[in-house]
Image (cartoon, rainbow over all chains, first blue to last red; front, side, top):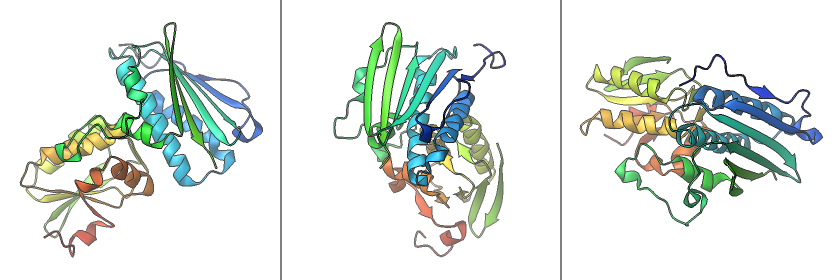
Length: 158
Length: 112
């Protein structure tokens, strides 16, 4: 497992704010702490839009689940592989693309089967993440591109 | 991991000072609350007033804490922010815990 100290988080220089039509691009190595930082950058990027707090909460939660999933399952050896995140606001929607070079995402995970995969009375300690993503994202699309997973998550902003 | 514990009537109240219970802190959170709970035999109220964000890792940690208390003791939750409440509601885990608007509300609740 690589240490975090030599992992540099990059974002494009002089990014335009979301309300100016600019995109946010963040490249980082998968780790729970880096996910926190990337989410913080996303919230800063969205701040000029003045979205209602519940919309902000939802966006942060879904992206947290997406990025945690990459960290834990795309890179199961904890090797902190690369994550590329690109967010852009266009036509009253936020589109976020997340790419990783890890284990292919099982397509079944993004399909909405109309029912839940767990029973609260069983007291599960995991498996909530994809349920939250499917419940809260306005749109989801996954592609396997050569050696990359690409997940596109869309949120309606109106 | 910042938390403290106090007695409130028959309950052990654990006040969480962290603003986020996420993947970065879930294991430390689970261990810290479980250790505090193990020093008492009272039902536990987890005061989440300071918590503004929780993800599925944090939710899983709270479920693990509840299990660690065993079948004789209950875990109550208090002061859920809208973002935290949403996670419990969407996963239907709000049906598993007794949720209070404030720790003190447990004293005159109907959960006996």
